[in-house]
Image 1 (spheres, rainbow, N blue to C red):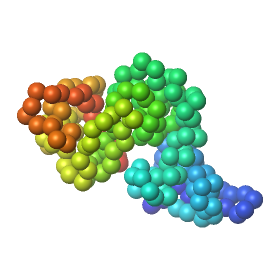
Image 2 (image 1 turned 90 degrees about the vertical axis):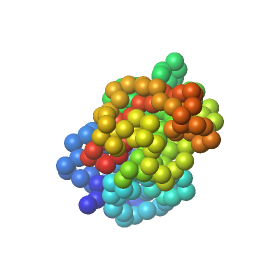
Image 3 (image 1 turned 30 degrees about the horizontal axis):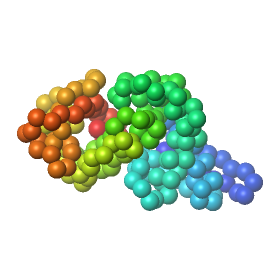
Length: 201
């Protein structure tokens, strides 16, 4: 079940990546993640599953290795200039992922980390909001450990009403943001995509 594996000594090592992973960006991210374990945690042997590689919640070694991998492959010095004037949307993330030859999820995290736009990345698995990352200018809170509201694009994907948004769509701000009325007039823009192979939106 391992996506990647590290076996090393103090002087050398081997990183193996699951042969069925076709995406170059995903393969590169897994390699960088394993290097992160070696450099940050002095790890000499570890197997990483899809669950490990999808962890971006604060305060655990898997997240630290993911952050290391994102910064190794898309350092701030190279990424930040590319974000000036770029609308936060999944098409922009796709373009950057292609240019940097990285995974879409890691690219989205880096995008949110360095953009000046008020934006949040929200990941839903198993029908529940599992984690989020927000830019420094995004001053709102999105509740975790709950299903996305039915008025959100993610909620409509889960209910089978609609598929991927294919770009930014207007949704009631209160459907995502704590403290606002989902039936109110305030709106935010949402771009949502289902990633079936990983069970995520």
